[in-house]
Length: 203
Image 1 (cartoon, helix red, strand yellow):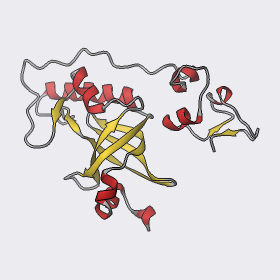
Image 2 (cartoon, rainbow, N blue to C red; image 1 turned 45 degrees about the vertical axis):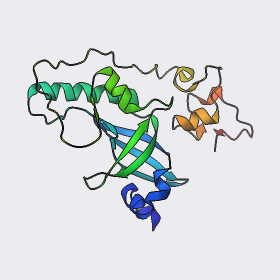
Image 3 (cartoon, rainbow, N blue to C red; image 1 turned 180 degrees about the vertical axis):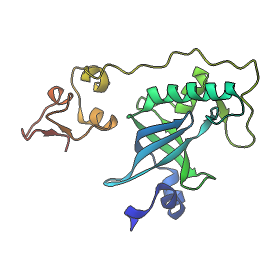
């Protein structure tokens, strides 16, 4: 029965226990600057795909009230997409959002940074904790020129997965990046130790 329940339903059932829980999630899509589609690991072997509203920030809407807001929204979405798509994040402070089928959560990057703070610092969003929102059509607002973070080349597995730069990819790093279990055909495999020689690491 639990496998049929979504994240929101699970929080309704156990709000106190989940309020203190951090959940590992892989970002599958960036819908806009402050909304992600994730595959969340609620418990071991129990996952759910759903939308998460990023707590602590608001970004412009893709269906904005003016062309400027739409341009800002695309810039914010692309910034977050390049930063997070196909990456693993941690969700905490999770609550049901006012829109059905979606939750609101604090989102932290693998290095521990608060995603909301990263977006705000780069100029793609504003602090937001609920209530009325400000508009994005003021002529003084410009599209930020903050550089969109570029991912390392896919041909360099150490740059992608070796977070502590020791020339080796650990199971902890593989799990943090959402690539475990790692099979022999994966680029990271040659930088890992297959102790039982079965072609799979971090089962």
